[in-house]
Length: 303
Image (cartoon, rainbow, N blue to C red; front, side):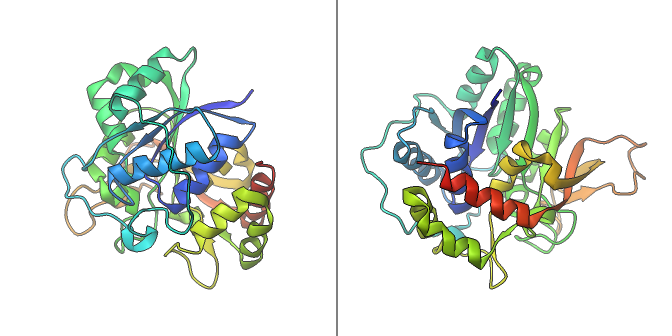
């Protein structure tokens, strides 16, 4: 049976790759796409989600979400993803309309209407998720698990301590990690290992219109270096489909919400501060060659 999921995103180039796979993989059944301010402003992330839905002629609904973090001032990542969030490719312009409701309302309605709990995959800042859990706590039993891109046990990519998604809205992240919902943290500890190699990048344009589109976006991506290109958000879907490729550790994750370490995900690695309790399954290692092979095989299978 396909995994039924909702993606909450801020596309963004690596989000675009994740959405591409979620819309097309036969073992995934995407129920809803919600957009949030993150890599670029929410009007642009919503537009980018609609571009991808239209590119693949999908009928998955899209809802526009929060334009600002709960408390912290908004800082985007346009320096990494470009002003539009998805530069480098000319998408269709006859786009569908977003749902006539907020992302939080769409999340609530979709979760409550589903015949069984759904998997929630946030790949942007967690503002929509924090608002959902605080405004409509009745949805919590309807969320099977959260597989979230974000966080790091070590070095951050926004500050020395903080990864971008958590840094963008640490207060929402704190709400999510305190919810009691089973959470898998797919953070920089694995996403900075699962880099697309130069061989993978060279192969992409040969893989039809989807490979051509993704390659065009990736060549405008300001992340990565000569060692490879990180596909942070795609790792959430790789985990869903191939958890055996990951090494994980159960631990308690606290979120720093102020001070110089704001946005840091603090893992109680020694189990010293929470009486042995845990609130997250944290990905700490990954089979990077398997990720590259899976990514190419998956893109090649998309018509």
